[in-house]
Amino acid sequence: MNDFVEKKVRDIQKAAESVFDELEAATSGDAAIEDIEGAKALASNLLDQYNDSLNGLELEDREEVKMKLNYVVEGIREKLVLLKEAPE
Image (cartoon, rainbow, N blue to C red; front, side, top):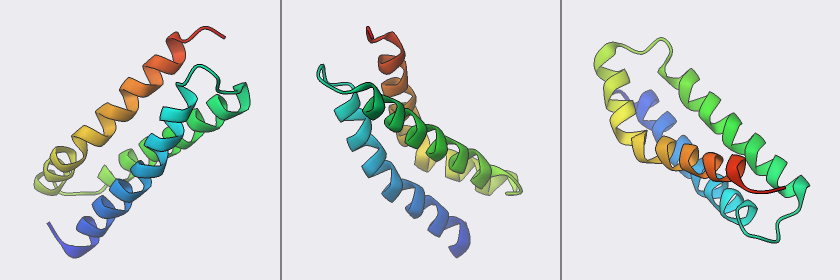
């Protein structure tokens, strides 16, 4: 994996930290609707960034990026499911 791809992986990992914090706060019982919607938007943007980072990569690099970021992507998706299931 080249330096450019490694930087993208690090950038997504770093951005995921704040997204996880926002999602955690949004899944708390006392989160405002605006906070929940904001967390969903941040998560959606990060997932879009992840998907965009895969475009144009060679198969080997794409698979390596997927492997390195799988826990991030799955964690965000799990939190989004919790938000969708939460009563309003």
